[in-house]
Amino acid sequence: MNKTALAYGALMLAVLISAGNFLFGNLAVKEVSPVALAFWRCLIAAIFVLPLVLKRQGNPFRHFQGG
Image 1 (cartoon, rainbow, N blue to C red):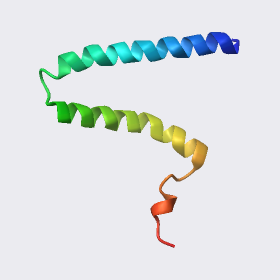
Image 2: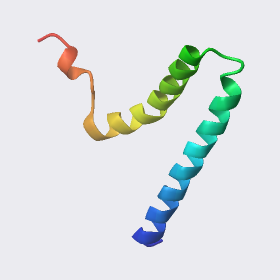
Image 3: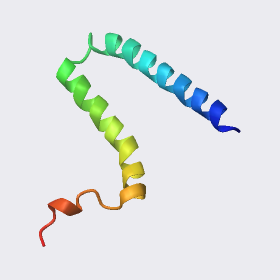
Image 4: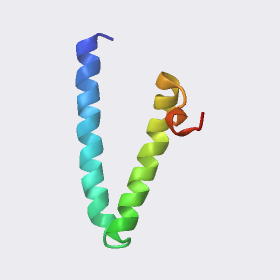
């Protein structure tokens, strides 16, 4: 697969995720408080992003460790 097709695919995926987030948020805010919704959204995003950070940079918390 060439880089242009991969870039267009990534852009399309970003648009679909954003649209899905908007639709899900409108439905979920009727059942869950906005603060809880924001918390769960950030937590789920962190779960998906943390493995990428660990693979690329190692321990991201090394600056907070004593020594």
